[in-house]
Image (cartoon, rainbow, N blue to C red):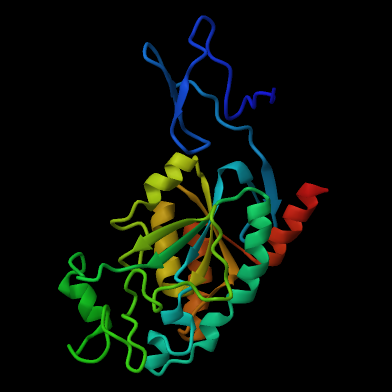
Length: 275
């Protein structure tokens, strides 16, 4: 018989039923119930501290309560033939995050850190997109905006399940990863992201993706306002904006919203933690 894992399946209370069924998929929060009893006392998993080099201070966080959020690494932003390319913007700067993410994500998975893909995935009818959001991306009322087909391609801009909204081929989404659609520059607005993180028991968030100064920054800010500890993994982020936008973002994260590190620092810490 397999041994009981006290972190995920603790023994029942003295005198309680041994036929409890678990309710809740998150390791950090679940109940055990049977016909006569609800046990809400399941202890949380033990912590797994990890210390990384970061600015403005070195930081230690709990791997057991950490998730990695990857923002908008999608064809429309990072691939020739996508929306950004159609607008005449060079996609190469946005692709700078691909290789660092490709190295970091497998190591985080091996450490049982959830990977959350936070991507634009608009409804086909755009019924949850008010005029101000449509204007943001189609300011003159003409051209190719949200939900419009890309010329010569046909994929609809940032529409859920279209090629345009798919994650770039170079980054693998695994079956254990979590995918969340977003509809604004911040991934916390009108999405289930916060509820998912709380069910996971998450306290610390690592951030990567595009654009550093827009969707990554807005999502990180909202995470900070919600009480999460935030760590921006700088080389896992990229932007097509001018360099001063990245400089301002890094300054503001260090000053107001959390910590800045890089993938090498996280990988070094994970390797040290294993040895």
